[in-house]
Image 1: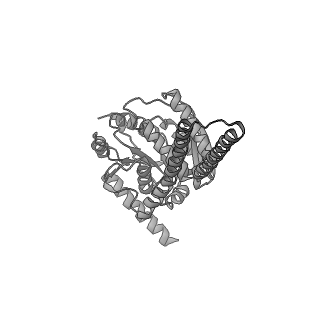
Image 2: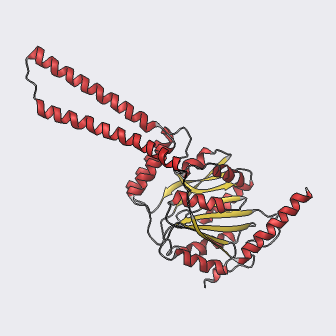
Amino acid sequence: MNKRFEFNALPFDGPFDKQLLSLVVPLFNERPMLPIFFDRVLTVLATLDLRWEIVLVDDGSDDGSAQYIRSVIDRTPGVRLIKLSRNFGKEAAMTAGLEHARGDAVIVLDADLQDPPEQIPAMVECWQSGVDVVLMQRRSRAGETVFKRWSAHLFYRLLNRTSRTNIPVDTGDFRLMSRKAVSALLVLTERNRYMKGLFAWIGMPTQVIQYDREPRVAGETKWDYPGLVGLALEGLTSFSISPLRWATVIGLIAASMGAVFGLWIVVKAIMLGDATSGYPSLVALISFLGGIQLMSVGIVGEYVGKTYMESKQRPIYLTEDVVESRDGLRQQAKQKMTETRHVKAV
């Protein structure tokens, strides 16, 4: 047993007038990272004058992550496991964590520790000063390739330029939200979820803290380039109809080019008596126009597909199990009784 998991003050002990901080941690196959994660996060939480809980959402892991978290729950009150029935994706896992979090403030934190938990005290201080959202903006991205940093830089600016919602650049999911902000976010029940956009859509008074993103210390990233491209398309099509307008503009340009080219062929044949070479120009023109048509159909299909999936009204996620220590359950019942008595007194 890691002795650093043991603290004299339990997370739910003490007067209930102390605010409760929830950490929502979506994860998928992060077993090598979990001992390091708990070591660092619990050390940081022990320094706060707050009650706290850690809500870990296992998004269908098959590497023993859930079993390890269960062993931590047995010796660490305040840790809770939400095990999803399969892999629904990070956006759904975050939604599950936010729906199960009980805190007066909620921090979304990845299990890979690239977003340092040592920033939590500064985030809490900003929240206690009166803001509803503390937005963590990346000043640097250590451990990532030049191409990945460049493509991320380009994407965030493209998304912000095309979206009607002002989505802050160089930000991920690492942020603190007040209970008011979380409640507003949970009203949004759409199935195709791009959480960075939804976080920005609700607005609320916001303060930005810049930080340096750290490289991974264990395990491997679950985001490959096809996955990142898919997430980027999700963001672009969830918060903007600009791609549809782009397709229209490109179609107009292609049609104009085709008309000018056809007119040029007629002028050459009539005025100059130049015979038209049919096959090369015809093949090039057909290929060009066919590519534009297929691209436009694909863009329209993306939006139609989103509408189709929304119409099904399937749940965003399904839960297989919820695991919490007995101490946490007892304290939760005690808190509900205290709140009930307070409401009756009022």
